[in-house]
Length: 118
Image (cartoon, rainbow, N blue to C red; front, side):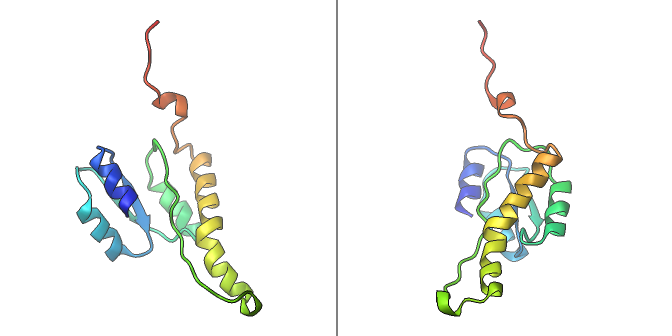
């Protein structure tokens, strides 16, 4: 949330995404400027990642900060406990980045640098 708000204060048009639409709207209400976009999606679900990427214009940058935390003693942890944390925290951002790159949604860094005259 704070990254989105601070980027908006610097003049960026920001696309925010998460599973919880209510919290997204709260974040949007804290942001400055115009042209921000809210897209509800769960990055632990590849179908929703693909739908998210389809709705996304070309981007100057991405901040991967989705995630959850859960404490479970290692001796009691089940695979489902690990998956519950691993999927949105690790697997989701990797898949999202892969789909963004495949669909050429990220501007090349050289395009973002100011042009200098010789």
